[in-house]
Picture 1: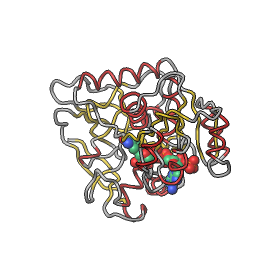
Picture 2: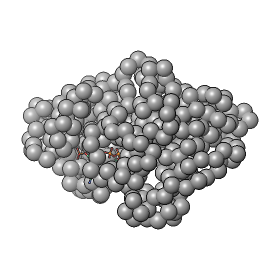
Picture 3: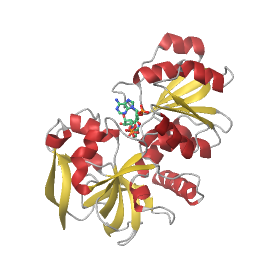
Length: 331
Ligand SMILES: NC(=O)c1ccc[n+]([C@@H]2O[C@H](COP(=O)([O-])OP(=O)(O)OC[C@H]3O[C@@H](n4cnc5c(N)ncnc54)[C@H](OP(=O)(O)O)[C@@H]3O)[C@@H](O)[C@H]2O)c1
């Protein structure tokens, strides 16, 4: 049995009143999970949705927060492919109420990996969700081909900045869309070929200019709402929009008659582990290989301290550039 602290949602509402630091105990992990002592954990817009009661995959409080975490394995079930002392990062058992904003958390054994040598703790804690989702979008559900043009919305955010890197690693030309010059500079540092500020530029005219009137082959959309609706006007024939999330507060509005007349498709993407564990293990090996080659890296943004969790969640409705990471414990 392990004892420690955990930030948990106790009511839906404003983060400072909705989350509470509690003392918890963690039993030995069940088959399919390992228990880690957390050093860092990744944050993102889903935290805001969870605290507000708008996250579609979770029920009523109380539940833990933190979908991904990195640290040291402290307990494994019999037959695990991990061992006590391994340094790992992975997706937490958040759908069962456990979260990474805690001293300990269970990771899903199928959705984790040993931390590659070139990763910092912050990069490790903020890696799993963004890149597993980008992989689901750009490899599994709406594959982007080398030479195609990929438009990434919310491109400086957790989801967007991972997709733009994976898109580049897969050989696409990437147009990053974000809401400030600073965010577009951030996207350029992570490899975006072009940047468009949707707040000040005419998105449609600028994309037409950048693609010589051809439009884009794929939109990666963690934002939805009006920005997604405008971006869809720039889809080339046979183009696709990969629907990832709703950080604008609304999903991408779809006009089925327009989609019919222009031969375009919308594809839902939920980053779920493959049903076959061996196939899922290949995904994580592929991602780890790209890290080792320097092709992708966690786009770390602001790092918060453990006592700042309520403020960190409140800040997710107006995030700065990059992946927000929580430092839970020193190395
Ligand atoms: N499908 C999946 O499996 C999966 C996995 C992970 C996340 N998601 C979803 O993806 C969405 C984005 O999550 P994330 O963690 O990537 O978010 P994030 O890092 O906070 O980035 C979201 C971006 O959206 C833009 N934005 C536009 N309107 C916004 C608003 N009202 N509030 C906040 N941001 C706004 C911001 O960029 P600008 O300032 O440039 O506008 C921001 O950088 C969420 O809905 C999340 O649930 C889905």
